[in-house]
Length: 117
Image (cartoon, rainbow, N blue to C red):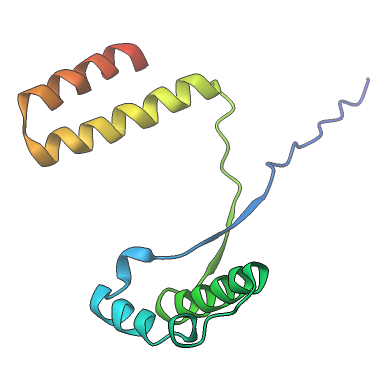
């Protein structure tokens, strides 16, 4: 009798950083933005200004919408990249049609449905 060896294929782990931008209070963000040193004491050299801009905005975003590290193991091995993109487009168009209730948006959505399959 022969032994069968089965190896388990692990899903690739993808790590990415997200921010909940929609949770930002725009009035508070605007007020905090106007208080930055970027406007009161801007750097004189272009490279220094870019570094200052990056530092200030990152600090402001970390206060208002902290970065969150996400880990994903979900992969879709059955769909090609084109098919997955078509499905994403179809879902985006469906949301647009449901939100607007416009007949033109419905027709665009239905064409995307036929294309995505």
